[in-house]
Length: 464
Image (cartoon, rainbow, N blue to C red; front, side):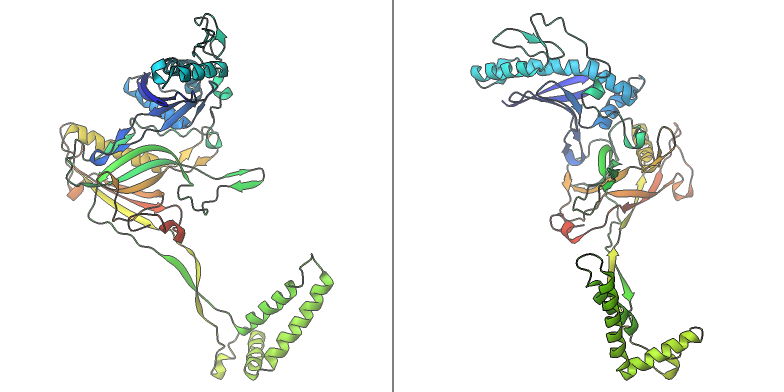
């Protein structure tokens, strides 16, 4: 077997450990979550211990968020990113290294005795902590050094987070904290039987901004990647289908006009610029400009209609912009044409009626409302000198736990408006614990990038 899965509960946070017995690499994942209709969402890759025993984050924010969620449920204080780095790289990695070593040091996890000896010898020489060298009998300590007495382990420095590749700073120096108490929310609560129920899923994500480094801007969204702005996933909200679902696609076209004088000016400019093929030659440019101007003037003056237009036009300009030509009973052909001017961004409206049936469902609804409001809110950096882009949402229509085969697809969206009515039907009513008997929630989602033709090719369903 090449990969062995084990599970470790670290400070209340369940983590799946995937150890590769061929490479010695171990990966830490959040546990899979159950979605609608019994579907399963794979866990998120939190961190990786490489083949030389060094650790780095894959999802630093998600790892700390999951850890802090468990801290809250246990009534313990949450950790800042700096404190979490220290805890993970000094306490956590030692535990995870030991779990990996238990897998790598177990002969039954390999196909043959020869593979076991060959691989573990290599792992030991590479410096993977706690691995035992079958040839010498020495066992690496926690920093990867082979020693005869493995109990004499060294302790990593508290700044190991920075040394081992952990990214300890976030966008603009501000820490984006989603602040949720759990990762997945759902209404209605409870087990829904497999009766072909369909759902809408909203996945809150951190906004991944472009960057300006080395004097160059990086991160344009026009290169086919529809999730170029989608960062770390925060929370997932699964809600029932609603009666009114529709889409409207629009492309911006606009009227454009060009008269004979503008055509002549374009011809003169084009002919003048065409001479500048080998750098700027002012003399050649002036000569070509003069020739082109004379040629265009001769062409227009040789046409009686254009000649009358020119005379009337400039006479009108001299008279304060009067329309002299129009008063002669004719107008110049404007060559009117509808021209494409650019793509358009779509927006979608959603409206849900929440009616809690028990205290647990009332609390779930309260949390769902808070999650939407928190993720759409503008964030501030710790020094309050900058504002950060609100989180965005991925939206999916689900059928039997998978993408709906006959519904449209949506680009990542920003929540631009969110409304809650606490008195549906104009009545204020609560249960004994104070929770409302109903909530009417409506909000607007606007796509953050336009839809292009190439996006439609493999979109699935009815396309974007």
